[in-house]
Length: 62
Image 1 (tube, rainbow, N blue to C red):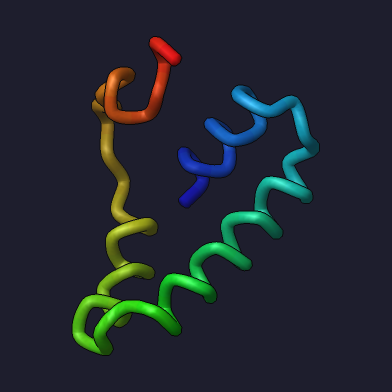
Image 2 (image 1 turned 90 degrees about the vertical axis):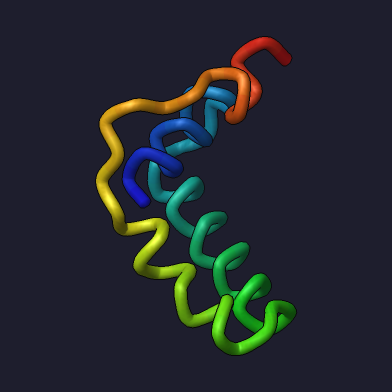
């Protein structure tokens, strides 16, 4: 999740605290809208440490 927070800080210029709150609000929203089995996997997906980030997938060319 730290990677997502850092990406939001880089792309938007908001503080790390605001980015963290944004991620938490978004995660909470998604959990209420997704089917239970999928919603339950969000935390583990976001907490998984990845070493390679696809810049196209995260909008580096936007």
